[in-house]
Picture (cartoon, rainbow, N blue to C red):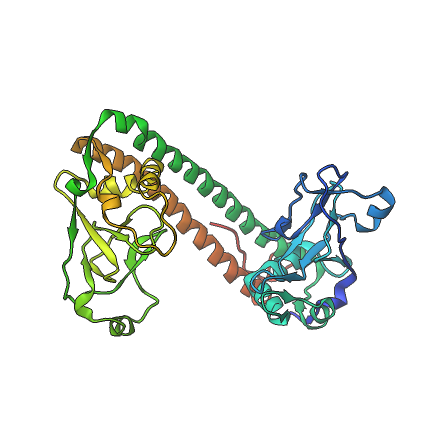
Length: 398
């Protein structure tokens, strides 16, 4: 079976625009803004306050179960929605609209699951009207044209509980990733900072790295130079089109464990390549000398210590102005013995692996939730209820 759908306006008791007031650090009550809607929840920032008398504030006080909808923002953010669950006093800003639901028909946490989902957000943005850089959502249009399923209230609660179990698993994993990333940054400072510098010999970068200019290999794949993943396959770009933009013979060859630096749009650090391939001739390709362990320098060349030293070497450089390779080549770099390079690289590799595995788990949880929503919100899968005698499909996070 599939659930009956109805315009969301049929289950909204009231809607209300917020207050247009300037923030006042000395104000007596917090005010919720767009930035306070995160992951389907309304989070109060106690530092952002306004001055209001109790009488003026009363009509705008948030109540448990209220849903706030962002009616004006950039096209990719308009329609963000969050539910207020709390007992703290707060009002809300004018570019938000408060939705008070008829809780005899719908469970607010069930509705926010729909509104905050990828599909829900995509549909809301389709209903918004666009200006040059802003998009606006008309509440009347939203009420009349945003459709929601209406299973029995008891089943809404069951669906809500299943989806919120996944939310809890997702939030827990996100917090764990954030903690592991903080730990990794601390390890970079501890292992690649002042102590390493003081206990190692120092050599000029151009005596440790060799500049490579191998070309004329159009059989190799074109690579993309990124700051978050290093040098990786340009999977989303048609290789043939890319090669037609320039003479293939001019593209530079990059080998696994080489480093790439852009002399035109330098963003800090050198980017490590995990693949063989080709990069634009605008890049400089560097290869580690025999005394260097690429895995170690992959970490060091992203460390705060190196980036600080590099920023001193290229001080005064502005966006768009070419940076001479000599800026990097003249830098002194630490050269610990090979065994120490291996030991430090092993610790940092393991730290990165933990973060990567948690990221994979997070992606899996999000995919599972999207699949569950598709099944549960259409009625294709039914949640078990205490008084349900029919066979149902159960779902729970792994």
